[in-house]
Amino acid sequence: MPRLLVPTAQDGKTPPVSYPREFFENHQADLSNFWILRRNQNIERLLRKYEKSSILEIGSGHGAVARFLALKGFVVRCVEPQIEGALQTAASGIETLVTITPRDHLQARSQSAIGIFDVLEHIESESEFLAMINELLRPSGVLVVTVPTGNWLFSQTDLALGHHRRYSRKKLRIVMESAGFEEVYSKYIFLFLVPFAFVFRTLPYRFRVCQSNNQQLKRVGDSLGSKSLPTRILGFASRLEARLDRFGVLPYGLSIVAVYRPTRRTAELELQK
Image (cartoon, rainbow, N blue to C red; front, side, top):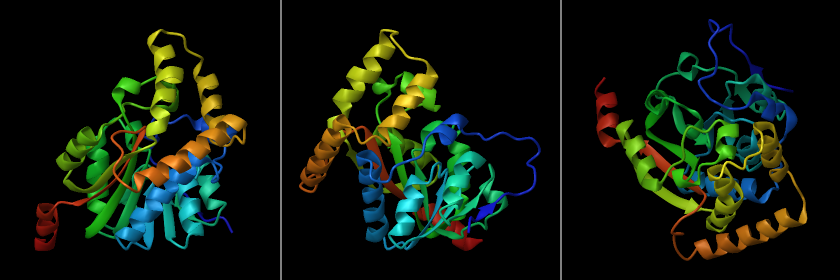
């Protein structure tokens, strides 16, 4: 039974997230896709490492992470500002709240784990968004984050997807620390995809040889669900890199996966209230 929670009208506010609505309508995420699967496996591993059995995902989109974690036995709830995306997670039986103001519907310090997976780059006001998350987390809670890396890799694809920026581990750490979080874990993944991104996305953008946003979105959507030979080859490379990554941290990658928690000072102030 779909579990979709839609509060009353929100005074005509629009989602403060720049994400193409039509992408939800035209594409669905394939959980077996190499990029989605590898990212999900890293997220699952971290939740188990920090002994979290439930998670609130904010900005759940198509539900690629939420559906995977639910299948792995986690208790998952979602918040998604656009109903087109929320319908996809709700249809999978995951409780999904449609809102642009989660703090209006959730109790402060109520969440043991929150996930924002490839969300932060879509939000213009990082500090306000992260402050809201900090309010929702318990002092012992964790925030699991994934973001795309490298402003030097910025391309038309980023513009089509509504990205305001890309990150380095250092830049992400600074942003999070300014919002009252401390890093407990951070690493790069998808090193092998960096040359492909630079050659096929960044260089055309720099030389102004670009497709339309609709064409860019179609390419991204196809890549997330394709069973083509190139995608299978990239999947093999991803599995090989994942094995190598067990022996040490990759020096770079196309994505960052990290874990943060409220700083000790933030937690102490909260306990004094």
